[in-house]
Image (tube, rainbow, N blue to C red; front, side, top):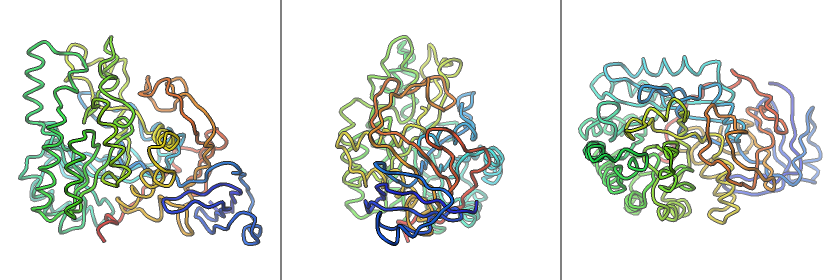
Length: 467
């Protein structure tokens, strides 16, 4: 889009700065910033002016962990790329990185092409892909090099889900060795799936079938053990490691120790682990099924360690792992057998607001909010400074954020294509008001003004923490 927009009078917050500044946008990019009221700012002229007085002006969120249309447990995640990216925009997220899936017996290329077909022409905001590697062999390893060259620079492996996505230690080591050579980043779902399957079988045999048992069998110690093992395998391979959806304090300890040793090890957590707990999994009348995800929700005492990890930078990123399944007809597949409940929570629309609430509550600073939700995910996955900050030359992915507006989270008012909210009834301070994606208003004063197909595929460079 041509034309110029100026955003006046807001507090511009990035990972590194807070400044009362006017922002000039031209041809979809940030053209200039100037302190509000100065001659330089007064000289900005534009066809469209947005008044941000009393508001924050922040970079659009980067959610580096979503699963739109993911096949799982005999069903599909209920958000399409169209509905999911629209909901993301409502929540102030302007870039997602979703996971293309390699099926066993198929090539990486087939999986990536299938995900491109799902997303192309359907997204309201920009998107990239990670690649789930389910079948490590000589051909797959060669393909990893090609994918890195074309901008798919991260590969997810699973120590969980035997028979579905699971890789054994030898396969993991081979993929890590390859990524050490080609510059890719291995993302790890760190849970000991072989041991968990034994505990699942034993729990079901005892008649323990309710959703809360999902959390009890997927033990924190088995997350910590897998995290430790992944770190050691990466160390042997001389490769960097990014551990996804860290939920247990014991796993944070493993990451902190590795980072203290100077290893290139990174950790992500998700809002559900910061705000929800096993209390939710134990909700009666099968309501707990709404909160079944893996890694699972933990007892409340784990939350303090996760917040601490975010403050000390032992955890660097908060993503959603957005993978919604409707309660009616999807989560209900697991009535009488918790192991058949599709794993995943909706959250792509709630992340920026929940993390602003964490600022209000004193867990993190405003700049750290932007760092863990925008700047670091962009850097981690090779999109900075195009994404994740407000600086001349960056894409004009900008959110006007009202820090004083109050809202109550509810499925009645959210835009995700799912019949419940994981945060139903939660009161939050702070709300997205206007969202620009590459300078185009997709949310305008709380109205959706975007459209499917505005969002474009974004190839990525390699992890910018390793250069």
